[in-house]
Length: 457
Image 1 (tube, one colour):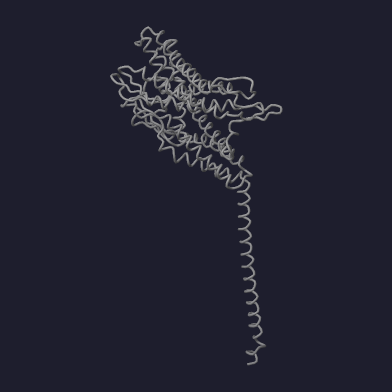
Image 2 (image 1 turned 45 degrees about the vertical axis):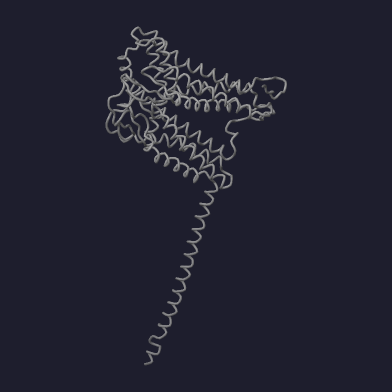
């Protein structure tokens, strides 16, 4: 089957075939990203206990974890399930899937030269995306099944679901990216968020600003602690003596884990806490950690004990990020009717809360069933502070930047002032009448003095 492009002169391949080819391409690139560093480290180290096949399998394990899959370890130093996403590597896989599907979306010519969708564009895009997601998920499950060893068992069902979700997010984002067009003479611009119906486009912009700001705040905090604790991390790196290639691989591993550490820091910034092992807790107020793995990135964690009072000033970072999104959604929704504005405000608040909690949940995990069985943010400690920040900043933005609310507030204040003035005037009139009556009574009493009836007596 073939489909015509917008011009009607060129022919393109079946969308299903294009989606399948895109899935194979994305899987190949993602696999190479994980396997090549493992092979390089194995070939460089003369003391490595891994064979070439073992290094390849180790790369597949990292790929599965980065997609959100799960490993089951047995017969080694670590026993039990391993589930922890190196989010930096996850972002790489998302970027690969998005870039491949964007290229395919361009090849499908979904948008005409006039800036609109061509006939059957949505059907072709849906077919291609479905084929991409299905084959990508099957490929992930097959890699998990083929990579099993006596000591490492990859759960194929979990891998199928995890690979499918990442393919859906990355592939769908790539197709939306393919729809984007810059403004040209006679051709309107096509922006991704403009494709959403009002007022959800307004809510999406505000939520994107807030969530990206929260990520930036967490990353800034993690990098700040990394810079401050660089001497400790460098000393641990020297003691590991990984060599040149091994040092590069170890650095890449820590870069892959840096976004995960940023999300952990975000949990603390939001007023919650995160764990780096069973019975541990790190927050803005205090830190309680035990023996940690020999990973330089973990050497920059705060020392156990109570944190100084000024650590709480870091709460300003997430408040500023959420406040920027709140101001944007309130200002963009201004001028609409009250119902539309309320939908925009509510959608924005829900998107920020759910998005932040989902991000924190993705950063939780475990390594085995012993010391490191509890890793990442504690969601229960974050929910209330997060709700307070979102609702508080949104309420302040509505009071300051929503003109109708200000007008209503001014009208209410003016009405209250008028009622007070009327009450004061009425009270003054009543008081004046009472004074007049008192004066008349006093005059009558004075007329009955010495020249009055008593005087005549």
